[in-house]
Amino acid sequence: MENPSHSEIPDFATLAADPEIAPLLNFKPVVRKVKRPDGWTEELQRELIARIAATGTLQQAVWQMGKHATGAEALYKTPSADSFRMSWDAAIIIGRRRNGLDAQPPFMGEVPGITRRGKLLASTAGPLPGQVRNEHGEWEDEASFLARGEEAADSVRAKLLSCRRLFLAEISGSAGKRAAFEILTELPIDWEKAARLEPQPDEPWKSTNQRQPDMILTAENGWSFGQAGYGPDKMKELREALNEFLAEEGKPTVDWSAEDEPGSVRPERSRRASSPTSVGNPAPSPKPQDKPGPRVRRV
Image 1 (tube, rainbow, N blue to C red):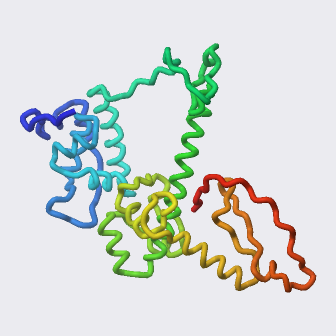
Image 2 (image 1 turned 90 degrees about the horizontal axis):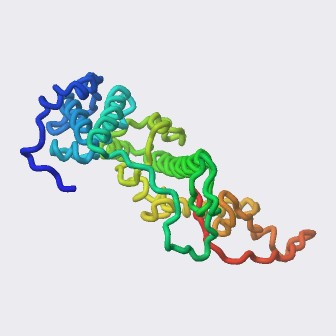
């Protein structure tokens, strides 16, 4: 969809006079720590809400204002922005309804003339009431299907937030790095909690968008290597250091690459325990190796 010409963009006064939009503008503006000439003033915050209600999308709203979505998202994520978030959420609902953006449910029946090889199709009798077709092509209770999706998303989110905690703990001892992180992300960080690897105040509602500055910095510094796939692998360094310590203590080390199931690890025999010179501790017979398969890096 092409952006409308500037002549078609309504001014803020027109939008503010709209009887459905006007009540949304009576929110408590978000207080910014740093005052910038091109920052999000109280008036611009109200204009943003009005344009979201008019267009139904953040991208279109900020385009009309000549602003960037990143700054608007930072406003939404500010811990004290409860009133602002309520107006934003209501504006999205109004805007999507006005512009016909609410998606319709997809057709769940079979497509004639298509045969799937290697997968059993669902029963031709059709679904029971309240069932939908899942990722395996089988009928499943819709509530169960949605719950599994939410659990998977929550699991990934929790892992990425744990990665961010490790990164914040790493930089918590450097005043320069702390200041740089706050400037780049515009996030309020409790550095005492960060040093103790404790959750930050924003974590109950924090989304882990890999395009946001805090998650980009986390990945580029190696703390989400297994999840994001770039930057140095800090988790590998920690695991190697742990195994070195265990070996020095004469304790079994951990074979991190031999994870057969999510969340499980297989202990190796330490050098001292498996040494042929050990008295009264004969080396156990080797177990048959599992067939090679995909390895999942766990954080």
